[in-house]
Image (cartoon, rainbow, N blue to C red; front, side, top):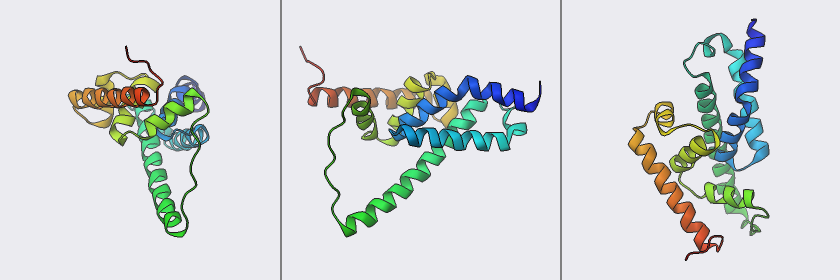
Length: 164
C-alpha cells in the first residue's frame, strides 16, 4: 500500500473523532474543522514519521490541542484590546441543546474540558487520556469527576434538570 493510500485510510478512520475532539475544545464547529484540517495537513507533511508512532491519532490530538491553545491566546489578546476600546455586547443564550452544552464546556477549566472532550467526544479511556497528556490516571479521573459535577450543577441552576 502506498504512503498516500495509507494516509487516506488513516484520515477516514480518525477524522470524525478528531473533529469532535476539536469541537469539544473550541465549542465552534467551523473552528473545529479548521483545526482538524491544519492538524491533518501537518500529519501529511510528516507522515513518514507520524505513521510509525504507536498512536498516530494521539499525535493529531496533541497538534489540535496546541493549535486551540494558540487560538485562545490570540482571542485573549483581541478581547483585551476590545475591552479597552468598547464594552462587549451581551450574548444571547444558546438556541439549541448542543450550543448550550458547548457553552457549559467552555466555562470549565481547560484541563477538565480537555479530559471530558477526550473521554466523551474522542472515545478515549481514562488510561488512554492519561498516557496521551502525560498525567496520572487518578488526576484524569479527578478532572472528569469535577467537570461532570460542575456541568451537573450548572444544568440544575439553568433549570435543565429536575431535582427530585
